[in-house]
Image (cartoon, rainbow, N blue to C red):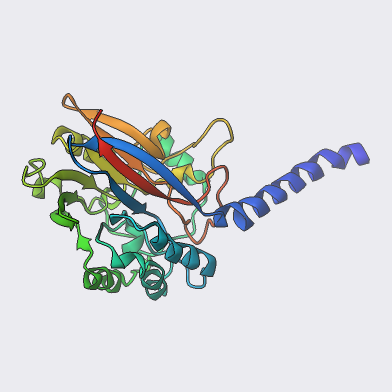
Length: 308
């Protein structure tokens, strides 16, 4: 009897322990990643950029809110928010409160699909199935009946009032202690809202430094940015794989980016030109899958330095 039930009970116990760890500890174990990127022209002073992504705020997440507020102590030169701030229709005030101290610094933002639409309960195995079938996102179709529309306009108004640049399929320039940074942004490719043709042509050449910003790092977008000679692209969306296998890594990216570049710093080459790409693993989860494993939540402080 002991042998008959011992193995399945052991498996069940291990699964329960893993779920408790991934939901109760790791998903709340917030980290700061520090990355140095050699992209600036010769003679420019270093720039410290705080990238925040995939907060997926649910009302009542006090620890996350306190941690986000504490990041102002890093005193970055500017902040880039790469989208998916919400996972709750009631979350806008708490996002704005949590980011309030950071909105004292220059900044810019793009939105992700979860800023526009509420999450749906999904079987996590569908992500593996969609990867196998080469399908990602809504494929340009409107959301299904019953999908909740988030009050993203209130979030936009809060960011705009603080002076952050809205980079929705447009360009903007930040002035940082006498340095000009040109930013070119896109709406979320995951739901086919990106319009690169509206911002094509590459850096204007009038700023000290230029970079691309987008929520989901789809290859078509990365190709466009790299081919247009942007030295750096910032993105989020992937959650770093969210549920990873130790010593192996991510199984999915929830887009057509390869799993080797699911998070952190890498490069992307198109039309003979190469850009640095940084993909944030994000600091939240969909409210219906509040777990992370071997992939703790994070934000990144990027220090941009002169090219080698």
